[in-house]
Image (cartoon, rainbow, N blue to C red; front, side):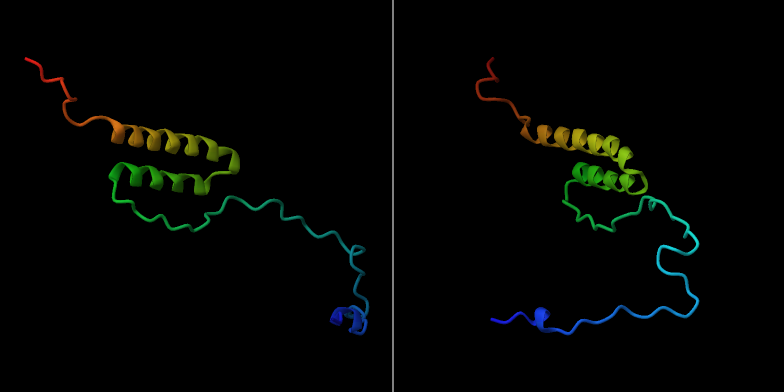
Amino acid sequence: MTDEAAQAPFQDPPAQAPGAPEAGHGPAEADPGPAGPAALGLVRTPTGHAEVDARLERLADADGLPADGHVEVYEDVHRGLRSALTALDAPTGPRPYENRS
């Protein structure tokens, strides 16, 4: 095996325009600072369960918030999903031997 990168000839970096300041030696460029919150553009597929779908849509509220604001939204969604799952486990009819007269 040969290493093609080791055999490639050395290339000088591109030349700067005459009179242009060297990198790091010119006027200070303005630091744009951290980017603001931006939506990720994720598509939420409906589950067919209205309560769960409503909670998943609530996640969109986090899109416009800074990272430290996400916790409140995530905790709210988690509580709602937990409640929906707990309701699925609840009995819907009488338990055996409950209909005693």
